[in-house]
Length: 362
Image (tube, rainbow, N blue to C red):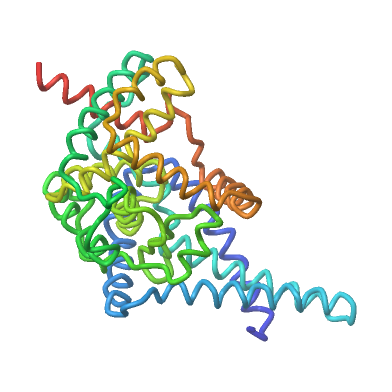
């Protein structure tokens, strides 16, 4: 660790500056959008992503493991020093290390939480919606999912599969963004492809399906999951790679780029992501309406959802509960209160899009 105390205190003091900047940036999203998200930070993200893109595996995965182990070592040293003396310097080393990580995180990506919300970027009007609006959205998504399901491959058990596997999915994720960029320039840019996580199977126990690592600009995907939402997950992490930090907005962008995609498996995966979120919202608001619409699922859609549910049930437990709590705390610390709108921002964006399309159709 750094031996000079002055430098340590300087690094720690920069945390206060970063926190102050974050508070200011919350009030000026237009400035953040133009100068940080589409300016300074985009340059950093693209440079990192292109550089690490030449590496066939996730460099960030190994970096995170190394940084975590270093954190564990520093914490152990603190406890040892408490017993043997010299604890103050050990604590200072730990705080300096955490401060450096926080500053790099904020500079490389963290201020994106303050950029313009995607409804402003896409000119979608989020407003209070009725249960009837939600019902009609779900009905529309079911019709689309049922039709798209007929166009995808399935195995001998009648469950949706992607013949090319995860490698093919990660390679094709860019197509949806290339198409979406024509309408939303904010989704454009040059980035490396999403990468598979080597410890994917172990990650299943946490319930985590993907991780964006700002330190390396890599979109990392848990590939040891069912094929149903694999394309949507890859698109979700690619949204983070393009500077969209909010989880709910990354979900909507995943849906958007998947449904704009030229391939049916992506279209189906994105539609199913939207359907799952929308039907969960309807279940909370009107259980009888939810049950009524479930009956209209095609057999293929039913089998895919059942298989996905059975798959994840094998990994439920204390590890996933703890992971959820940690993730929720992280989201709240960055100002993400799901449900600030009527049904949560993901569903509200879907509702806004649905209403807009209906207006244009009339």
